[in-house]
Image (cartoon, rainbow, N blue to C red; front, side, top):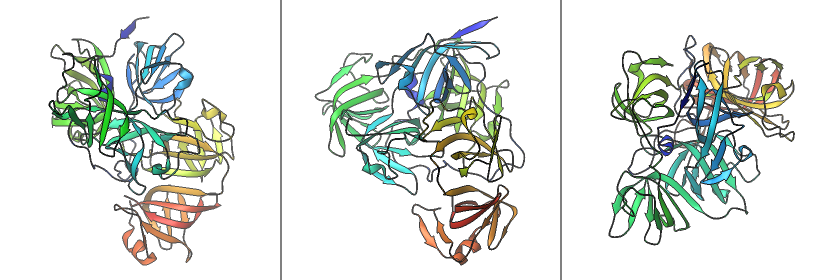
Length: 494
């Protein structure tokens, strides 16, 4: 057996940071951009052989990252710079795993697992329609695959939480797509943290910017910089403090985070993130890492022609002598738009049915969470049973079915919700058909339009004049048949 040890060579923080500059908008809604389902299933993606991963945890029983299960029996764990155990980690947290894997990907071992949040602090604003909020001057976007903790202090309006801890990936505008959000209660220690790239550095005033946040480091310990105490624009840093006046963080410590980067010739690396700089399909950055492709690069989920700024991808390959990651594979990540909430009709192996819809799960790629009183951790598909109340988010793939990326089991409820694309021939006023489910409306149905920055009520006439085959809609109501949902509310989505 030929085991290939591979040490990560991509600076971990770049997997969660965008390019330097002011933060701000970019994207809206909670799905990160959507498109109607493909007419035929695209090739499946996933990383199958790397012994090193940077990406969100999708499951436990060891640690599963980027579709690989890493044996962690001998691994060391670090969380926010402190020693930890596997029990301190949660699904959705973006981690750095160093280890080794067999050529066929069947036997992977982790030497270490490391987590650092992107930002932690109080939320200053939250647009519940667009799914964006601001914490310490960083714009964070909630998407369909964002995981939340299951405590009562994580409300729909995050401004009501004492503070939040965010893990995620940033795009070229500095907007963070959250993979997990944990809300802090009264036990929070009050320490404010933000990771990012320095811009607008003023050595005289001893200030710099991380997106829209000003950091005053005049009273801070300045640690681990290549030249002692010297900060430059573009430096990846973590700033900590306890005082924030709404625009400026008074830092108690600023730490250089670039000293974990070593892009030696021949070293292997993989990274999940957004394309943060794009010149051409052979010259672009993924989360700040220089990437090139060649005639041997394999594409999944699209082609080289689909590459562009702010596209979410997974890339693996080897660094060349110039420190550029030469991609052996580029996996283009599809948008996640489909959602269904209700009781399970049946469970058979890795396949579920709900509202008559076939749902396909993958133990390596579907993120499972138990928010019911049973509180099984880790939750696996084998723990699910007919009648369980679940929320499933994913992609319509293949057509008429759901490939689940996130499944949460909750305590029983009567609410049923279905979000998806109107089928060809599926508009027949007063009914719609989505994923084989007939959505029945009546004079009591409330119609809304959330395609803009705000969610507004509309009349039935406006809704039916606007909705078309391929439109993304969200229906909430009650299950009135095996494949029928009677809608109390029907909403136009992005």
